[in-house]
Structure formats: structure tokens, C-alpha cells
Length: 357
Image (cartoon, rainbow, N blue to C red):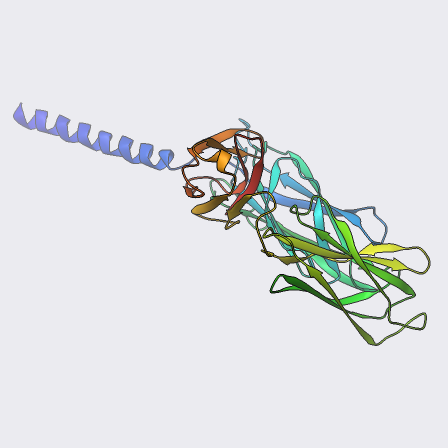
């Protein structure tokens, strides 16, 4: 009897161990991860012609190729990062349309990169068109725009198509661009922004307008004009230009060139940035660093905001967290937030953006 009871206990313990092992394995697999297989299904250009004049729209198509019998192949929010890399012939300008994705970070200028992260669920077989504004930089040149899709949280369950998440395409910039911009920089020299640019192969350039934004790129205003130093219609040589501007506040400064051809064409350069100018902050509120992984510092020079509540919102307007502005300088921990773009809104209605890596 005792032997039989011992045998039953051993069988029961063995069955319990098997159950616990199976439960443990299944608990490690997200229920919505089955067959989830993001793929760069196609890359296309809008318009479909070969010419990129001053500005064009590049369209990328992201597809979740999951197929399952119970439709459990969704891609959860904040689980896919898209990397779009540009050659020296193109420069990223801005977002045109990116449903279900937000910009994590970006680099303007030649050979720049844009990182996007999904901020919403992507269902099985769903196709998302991502449109970005770009402009050409080099005459008669082509380059490859590369699109990569990577899982932030790796999911390998039933993912049998792990090699199909990369694709590339090349687009030709033809002779509609009136200048090759070799370099364009902005340097802070004791409250003076020294702006330098160098060109080659100028084709009937009339003049350059230097434009500046002091509000994060929402508005650009002309701050000066520099005439082309090329006497003839075309030159294959190198031309160097300099422009100086006195900065009035400590906000970031963005500069770009608006290039006028003698035939009436208008093109834009990529953006040069000075992270901090000179003098008091224009909006009396500064947030840094951005992007950040763990903390940001909020500097508030408006005394009326002391001991008031500030609120962190995501790009969809969802309230994430609140904190009290107890002093002119406040350190805020955001280490637990998902990667993406967020806004801090003050009690007076003003807000400031930051990026969480």
C-alpha cells in the first residue's frame, strides 16, 4: 500500500513538473507574437518619374506578412524599428505621412538616416505607406535609399521568413538641380553664427537666401541674401561663401539656403544646426538632452510656473505622467517610457518636445 502511494505521488509530481515547464515556456511567448513577421514588401517613389527637383516625396511600404489561422500575427506597439538611410544624393527634409509610426530620430544632410518606431498595433497582412519629404543635392547622380525593418523585441515563434525584412531601391537625380552643394555648416562663435557653404558645378545661379528658424523648424525666415560669385553661366570649379548672423537667444538655431536660379527655379539646401545660441531662452523653457534614454532636465525661467504641474503626453495625446515644477531646474526620470516622441505641457499652455530613445 505504501509502495503504491509512493508511486502515485511520484507520478503526480512528474505530471506537475511537466505542466509547470510547459506553462513556463508558453508564458515567455507573447500571445500576439505567433507568426508576426514584419517585412519590407515594397519600396516605391512618388512621383514615379526619375527627376527629383527641389523637393520630392519618397514612399515606403511596410507590410506585416503574418498569416495564421486565428489572426494572432499582430505586431504590438513599440516593437518594430524602421531604418531608412539616404545616399549623398538625397537629404531628408520632413515627414509627409507616417500612419502608425513616429519619428524616433533623424539626420538631415547627405547620407542621413531616419529611424521610425511603430506606435500602434499593426494587424496581419496590413500594409502601411510611409511618405517622407526629401530633396536632391547632386546633379546627374544616383544613389540607393535603403530600408531596414528590425524587431525591437525579437520574436521568432513561427517566423519562418526571417530573411525578407530588407529591401533597397535607387532613384536618379537628373540635371534639374542647379548646383552641387559640397558642404554647408553653421558654427557658434561667441554669439555669432558663422555660416559657410561651398559649391561646385553652379548652373546659372542668381543668389542665395540664408534662412533661419528659432522655433525648432516650424517657421523659417530670410535673414540675408548672398549673390552668386560665378560670373558665367556654368562653372565646374569650387566656390566658397560665408554669412554671419548675431544670435539673440539661447534656443537652438536652424539654418538653410534657398537657392535661386536665373531661370526662376528655387531649391533648398539641407539644414545646419547650432544647438544653443546666445542670451536668454526665447520661450523661457529649455529641455535637454533630447534624445534621452533615462532623464531630461527642464529649465524654467518663468517664475509663474514654479510649484505648478507639468504633464507628459505621447504623440497621440495620451497623458503619460505628471510632475511638479519645484524649482527653476527640474530633473525628470523617463527611463521607463517606450521609445518615441513625447511632449511636456505646462500649466500656461506652452509645451516642449523630447525624444525618448
